[in-house]
Image (tube, rainbow, N blue to C red; front, side, top):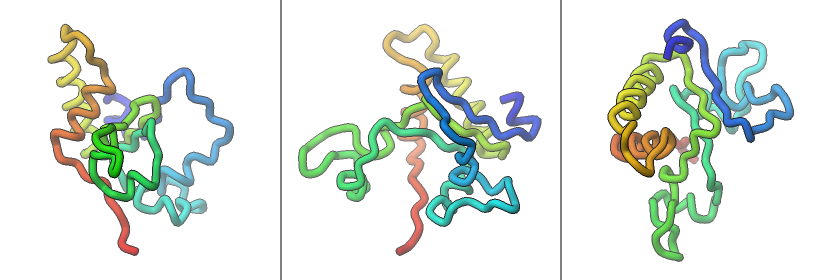
Amino acid sequence: WELVSLGYDVLISDLDVVWLSAGWERWMTYRVPHSPPLREAELIAMADVLVSTDELDEEYDAFGRYERWPHGAGWGRRTDLNTGVVLFRATNGSKAFLQAWRLAMLAKREAENTNDQFIFVAMVRDAGIEPVTSSP
């Protein structure tokens, strides 16, 4: 919260994440004027918060719903968010999300079988946040 409030974009990653190159900025930001985001990342580069996922499956994700059609219930899109890699931009939207996330974690600090990732996913799901997609 403090770094984002000071105007810094903050990238957080778990200890088991390895960054092999510095090229991640071209996927996540418009901050480098002489190096705009890759075309396929233009919408991603406008998000307040970016979060990694445990599942990437174009066949199932293309259906745009939680069920893993045609195989029945499963994690599906949105509920597979993983806070192992999260980028918070220095924006009002990001600051609001960080504050709400912090308060939600404080409220559940004594709860069993929960953690920051479960709370993050629940907040996104309960808010009805939808991914931004481009038109074909």
